[in-house]
Length: 253
Image (cartoon, rainbow, N blue to C red; front, side, top):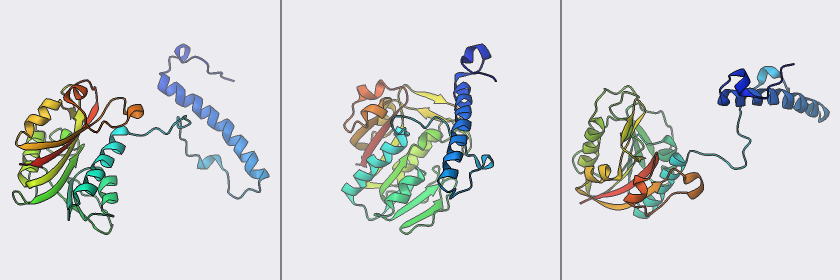
């Protein structure tokens, strides 16, 4: 029997080695569970043909994507505070618009529309390069973890190095005077991780919205798994990140 002890001797990448070990552990656990199930009366059939192998979830704490848990939670609290009659969301995570629509009517727009059948929620096709709204007509709008992708072709959109700037211009155009724009992007040292996303500096984002008031800047830092979200963050904190998440609440002047 092959005894796997050292991935270096077998020239196996550590990530793959970990999964191989987990697989052999799964077989052992399966045999044990099948025997226990049989003794307990066998309420369910237990067959190796039905294996659904999931590895590396036996952790001391629940692991989660800090960006996509914290930033919708941050925006939800702002919406509870400002109480808009309707909220417009442009291509943010579907979990956000689906849950928020239980409390606030939401119109969701995406370049690739999603079929969502929920009360208080409409889902339509929308292109950030040409949003279907009149100038200054939207009182409450969000676009979160979206702009960094525009123009990189990841979602079938045309390649455009300035696609993000054009999309920002559209968001600014449609926001009403005194209206709220809730805007989230990756934060750290500026770079393009083609074709996935861009990373922005704090100064870049503030300069793009120099005609808006920054009402709040929150930061989901690199170590957010242990520190959580920083609600009143600073530029200095943002500049230290590798792949942080900058959360900007802008109000149109």
